[in-house]
Length: 206
Image (cartoon, rainbow, N blue to C red):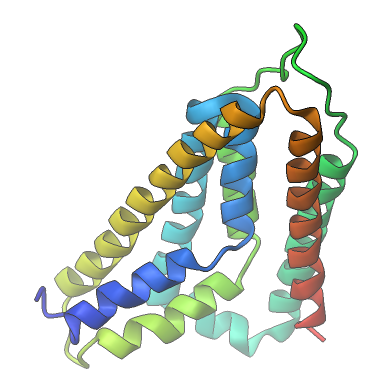
């Protein structure tokens, strides 16, 4: 279908890729928990834009250039790792109070869009994943239409899954709103997870 080889395996692989939690997932859930559905969707579109940029770059052969210039790759990894750790420390320092009139400072969806995009675009391993992923389902004589169809499939399935994640995350956030201890634990775990992703990125770079 769409000249994609092993079409249903391709769809299954995208779903599995989405189910693996990563820094983007944490960014989406954090935005949703803090400022609701609009903020969460802002983070979703930021993540999708980062993935889209990497898919285009991967198909354009930029990943090969990065592989031939390991210093560039390593510097981007360190930069991304530092940014993830910075976000994580920010969550660990966040003060959680009971819902007694005080509300979470409102931030626009654009703020979370930029933040999620930055998280996504500073992880070059995502592009290398696409470099390894796309050839598995491409014919040597694949047309631009096939490449476009593959990108569209990844983007639409990612959008559906991440939007569902926002809706579920928003429901959970409302349930935890009056329980400061639960909110504190969730916020601290998110911070630790972001720092862990950053450290993992650095450790794999050595």
